[in-house]
Length: 433
Image 1 (cartoon, rainbow, N blue to C red):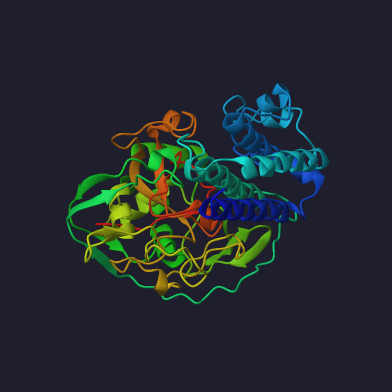
Image 2 (image 1 turned 90 degrees about the vertical axis):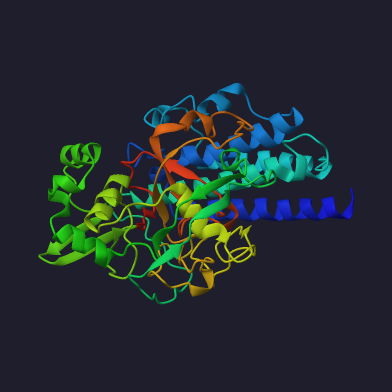
């Protein structure tokens, strides 16, 4: 083993270990009963997510990478997300917490032995530069965020986490930044960390546009609501209007009024007055689209979002993060889950993009106007079910990550997607024109 390979392996082991510690830390106060319950029809029981994390690791870091396995096929079937929709998962013969703990430990022990023997320099695309290990690391990080979405939906006393970090004060602004027209490089050719839907890098020509310097705040969104935004059909797409009428939606998810003109929100079991300078969150694509029309603007396309976040017009180069290529730090973005809420907008001036746009990584995912589609040269890797089966008009692209996103699972090129009706996500938006 050369020194460089040894360094990569040591870093992988450290990151995999830390990721598992975080998963268990998030679940430590959740009762066995709440682990097994399905808290919302669109979410899995938490105990399914936990077992799935271990089974996915076994599948890719043992069976696919080295032809080894520990468990029987029944376990693979139970935790195969493509075999069992979420409504079926509570009825499966799931491992309980103790059984899942033992299983995940056994898989990880075998994985660490395999890491030591792995040749990360060989041409196998799974192992080269540690890709499959990075994929597994990001997968566990993504399920951490999914678990937090489920925990936000718990009834009764709720999850009630304690914030572990102090968020800086915001600096709200109504200003828009100008992004000049011209070509930029969208996507990436990275094959160590990037997932298949982020590739290939390709030139895109974007006309000049303006973009909100910060996400839309609760204060601004309340103006839309109080101006009858949910009652004016002219502001909504036909699909959006039909949806809010059928679901009787008249405010963002978790908003409620204690008395006239007194808006509150429920967060992980805590009831709090609405923070007016915080970004609006838990809104659907349709709500974001209607607000943008009300404001005389529109949602940005995915290409516009990525150009504003990643392109440096002075050097003609692409940045890995809005502020540059250095990894995220608490001074640049609200990531890594421990705040358990978004910061007020404008709180991270050190995280500005080259165009002066703020908060493009962290705090909340942002809806874009674009359908989830393949880039030129796209190839499914290492399996179709990660991205390819979701391409099409049914899903809208989200960008930027949220406070619940772990730093290893976000970058300017990372693409998330979901149905336009989804509101359990830690998602908001900013407008363009």
